[in-house]
Image (cartoon, rainbow, N blue to C red; front, side, top):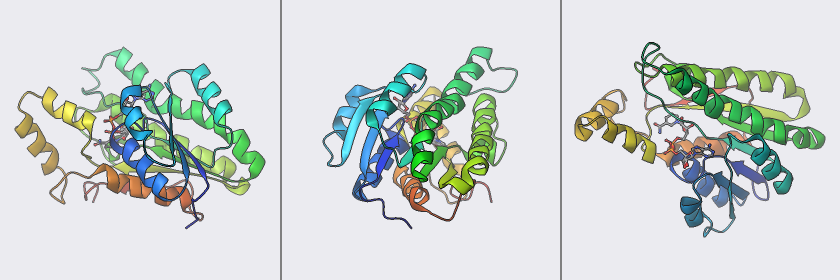
Length: 243
Ligand code: NAD
């Protein structure tokens, strides 16, 4: 595995959950981490960690993305972690939800990749890690239409980038987690009314009998960033959900 010390890593949606755990994990490797998010209050906590620089960045905004990457300069590793979970079947979903899900879960990755790829190609080296999900990419999950459609699209996007640039030093892989303990998962559990019943149902769908931790997913992000002989792959990390 490549040594990440001295590498420049940019992470989107890094203020909490998997993105935050990844910022901390990458910082431990000796990389310089740019932790970006829209939540400046939460980012401020991360800024105290050596090796982590924080920056407000809304990945829905083309101009903001281009400005941020121009200012950051060289990027060796891009971890596209931003994403949002909508509930509902195809008949329940609002069209606006699908548009928003495509914009955040898919288009935002296209924005950031377009911003970093020319520099990576110039140096003939770069690793891109995209956040997908077992939901949609690996299996159909009830009540997750917009989420499943867009997370499946992330796999297509990942493989297309990998295929176009595999001979030019660029690697692009995707992470497909199962159910992971994070602030937004907490929100989804509370939103169902009976928190304990919702939590038990989420745990029940994980054959390992527990939720994943953000740190477990962060370890895979670090591994893929430095995995020099793999590209175009989607890695399930899901407590056995997809077995
Ligand atoms: P989370 O949902 O708790 O946090 C999301 C973060 O994204 C927040 O800090 C928020 O401020 C930030 N954000 C929202 N809109 C943004 C924007 N426009 N620009 C920049 N940042 C923005 O974190 P999580 O649950 O760890 O999820 C992270 C990623 O992992 C998502 O893509 C999610 O779909 C994926 N994922 C999560 C799970 C899970 O069970 N938690 C499972 C599979 C995949």
